[in-house]
Structures are given as C-alpha cells and as structure tokens.
Length: 464
Image (cartoon, rainbow, N blue to C red; front, side):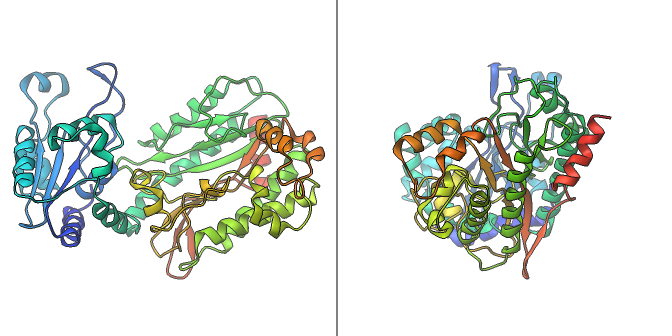
C-alpha cells in the first residue's frame, strides 16, 4: 500500500465531485476453479484497489457524499478459517491502514443501501463486469439482472476516469518496476528459445522470471509462432527454423501495477531478408510515433502518423501502391495493421477498460466504426501524467487477405499478387511503455532489445 493519506485524498476528491448520495465499490470475491476451496489467483478490482489499497477478498466500501462518512464492509475470519489460512488482520485494522474510520459486518450492507434508496438518495456504482458482481448488485439493489449495467453511474465513471488517468510519482515508480521485470522476461525468452522447443516451454520461462522477482503476470502470456493472431494464448506449437516468434507479456507488481511489452524475434539465429525488411518498417513506425508524443497531441493523430509510416514502408516493398495518405485515410493499411497503436496502462494493463473506452480513451467523443480504426483504444489528446503503450505491428492474416481480395477491397492501394509471398509470414509487433511529461515523454523502464542487431546478438547467445 501507499501511505494512507494518498487513499484519503483520493476518496475525498471523489466525494467532493459526486456530492450527493452513496458511492458503492464492491471488491472482488474468491473465484473457484473447480470447487469452492480451489480458487484462481486473487486479484482485487482495480478501482477498489485505487481507493483503498486493500487487496483482500470479500469486501465492500461505501462513501457517503452527504455526510462525508466512509465504511468498509467485510467478515472477520472465523477460527475454522484461521486454522486453514492463518491469522489475518481484522476488517477494522485493514480499514485503519487505509484511513477508513467506519467498519461493519458485510451482513449490514443491504440494510444501509435499502435505507438510502427509501430516502430517495442515489447509489452510485461502476459497470459490473463479473457475473458475481451483477448478481450481488441485483440482490443489494432489488433490481433485475438485465438492468444492472444500465444503472451504472455515468457521473461516477467520469469522476473515476478523471482521477485514474493521471499517474502520480508513486504510481509511475510501481509501473516502472513492473516494466523492468518485464524487460527481463523478454530478454530471457530471446536467449533461450530454440528450434524443437514448444511455445509452452518459452512461456513457462517467461513466467518464472516474473515470479522470481515477486511479480505476477499482468495478463496471460502470448508466446507464439503465429503472431498474425493478435491475442493468441495457445502454446502448443513446436518452434521451427525460419519462423518468427512473438512474445507479448507483462509483469504486475504486488500493488497491482502493470507492465506490457512485445518483442518479435527469429527462431533461427538471424532474421531472413524478408523478415528483416518488415521488422525495420515496424521499428520505423514505432520511432515515428514516439517522436510525436507530447502533451496536447491527440493520440489519434499519432496513430495515423504511425500507420502512414507503415504504409510507406509496405509500398517500398511493393505490397501497397498509390498515394499512401489516401490509402491510410481509406483504411487500406488496416489489412496489415488492424489494431490500435496503443492504450493507457496502470492498475489495468488496458487501463479502466471496464469503464468504457468512449470515456477513458475518447473523453466522450464517438469512436469510428472503420475496420482497424475501431480497434483504437486511445484517441484523446495526451496529457502530463498519462502512461501508455506504443505498439505498431504488421500482420499477414491469410483469412483477411483472402476476404479483402475476393471483395477487391482497397485494390487501388493493395498489391494482392505480391501478398502471396507473405501468406505464411506471421506477424511482427514491437511494444514499449511511455510516460507523458510536461515537456514530452519518457520511456519507462530499462531498454529492451529491439533493433535487429540487438535481437540477433541475444539470439547468438541462445545458439551458444
């Protein structure tokens, strides 16, 4: 936890902004895998964590914006639980560590909410994203399950976003710790992956590094020779000479802050000429995007600039044709780059995604429905204190190639005949994490291997 005064200040800001009614935060409960006592790793809800710092299951927090009172709800451990789990801090002790003065047993939560509803006072809560929370809210609020998401408080969403967008020095230090561990995870993969290994073995070594530094994973590891599949969590393939290997993995600190990096490297000791050409185009787009990071610059403009850099490189290889500015405006480059350039990052690897991209990444402005552009999670002007990823990529997705060619989509910009030589290429992505500062930007964490020379130097270590 941070110093309790930080949590006190965060909650006070929220109460002052909401002003009227109760704010309810439901913490996460344990989630059983296959029976009640065998659970998934516990991870607290990020907004609950942001306002309390308490990572413990089965809690709820109420902030009374009219009386300025705060109350933490939960159950103290019974002796039977202590026998199995050991002694645990009481609910009152956990509350005091966060600067919360009031506590109640969880059995009183519904009556407190019932009283507020009878008095005509609003109860503000965030959109539920776990079925357990939806059912719990249905029980607490006496409202049908289908109405839960519609009852979420837009006022609270906007208030939480307005706070969590800007990372304090303490939060940046946490993120940087996660990124440093993440760099080690990626370097390990580059120096140990060899033909004949399974993807699972590489993924296991990557996770081992995170655990060795007392970190968890910030999301399930993507470790694949099928980099054209954007979120590929299958690890069953065997690495073969001539393939590319894409690793997208991040560490998470004990306080819940994330790192998120992507590295692509050859399974062979060096890149082929074809692989090197595409890799260099992706790096050029990355560097172009980073050079434009500055407060006040809309991230959507940076996304387009990176897309134009990719398109120019692909035209030089004969894969695209015509005027590249027009091609990007038409979305032709999205066949190779169907993703967004990056996303916000913090307590969530996709920060606050559960609160809605239109509020988090677009500040209420509508999103595009154009293929590729609609995947852009962040478009708003950048501000001092934002932490984000830059992750351009080029992907050759055979099914997408075939569909677009059959429709003759963007045929004035795409050389479909030349694409055949890349059908089995896979995908390349490079990703790093950045803090927006008052004067520009700062890359977070140690430098990861990213140039052709750096990557091939570490691959030489793997081959002895």
